[in-house]
Amino acid sequence: MNCRVLHPGMFATVQDGGRRGHQREGIPVAGPMDELSLRVGNLLVGNDEDAAALELTLVGPTVRFDENALIALSGADLGISAHGTPLPLWRPVCVPAGTTVSATSAVRGCRGYLAVAGGFDVPPVLGSRSTYVRAALGGLEGRALRRGDELPVGKSSELSRRIAAAVQAGRMNDRVPIAKWGLSAALIPFYSSSAVIRVVEGEHARLLTSESRDRFWSGEFRVGAQSDRMGYRLEGVAIELSEPTELLSEAVVFGTVQLPPGGNPIVLMADRQTTGGYPRIGEVASVDLPLLAQLKPGDRLRFRPVSLDEAQRLYLARESNIRQARAAIALHHH
Image (cartoon, rainbow, N blue to C red; front, side, top):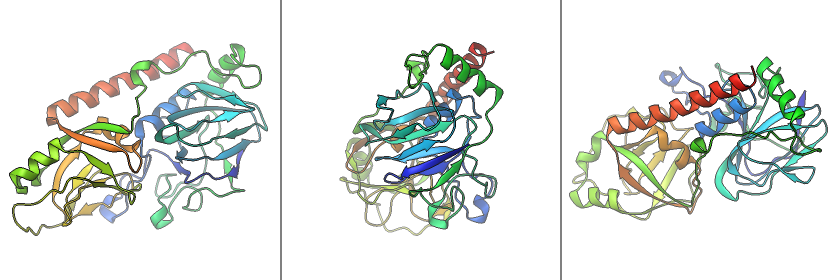
């Protein structure tokens, strides 16, 4: 089965769980900006959680499946519809062969995910199908989608076939069957243009002036226009070191908050480099990275301090919810 791209939208790429195990060679992990939405979207169609899906940014795309397909939409609400029927988020949908699935623009959030049973079967590069555009790695020829692209879809799992059969049998809509069940409300995030992001204070926060340290935790930042999958450039509150400092480059991760000489923090995102020499003044709690990834340029955020123990507890609680969702889907379609 193929999925044909009729309109590419603003910036749609293939992303899976990420290209892990190559950072020592300087190759970024890439993968989804919003890991939670990718994983849950795949669960809803019976895929492995890290199967390749489409990451859609702000606008579009429009695609057409040439065979019946089981899909799920997650993340930002991009106003996606099929045959004139608005498609719900966080719920499996059976798309008949030849159906055009089209998106408008983000109503809430920034990045939507389109998962399909079987996943998008583009060739893996270094063990991953994720697109890393800066190095033209992975995905479809290492780039964002273009009009006329054909995306191959992999073979559905037995669980996917059982979910599709159940959706067809209990259809809520005659033209586009939609599952009566969906993701638990406990796992569905709320996206806003103003977010509070929890951060573990970084090793180099000790280098800040006391005034800057206060401003970092109490001030409001704005996501800058130059933000992308590599990093969010924050504006609004200038942060200063107590004195000029030279540091050796050290490993950085998704969520590292760096402070370049200009005083405007940068939060490293999915396409981050593997090392960095700017002071690391914080690390975003993993559980809040999906929320951060749904902010778009112009949106605002504040940081709230959280201990490492609390950040770990929050992460484990979220993983417990995902495990319960996975088990419930498998049990319901046994």
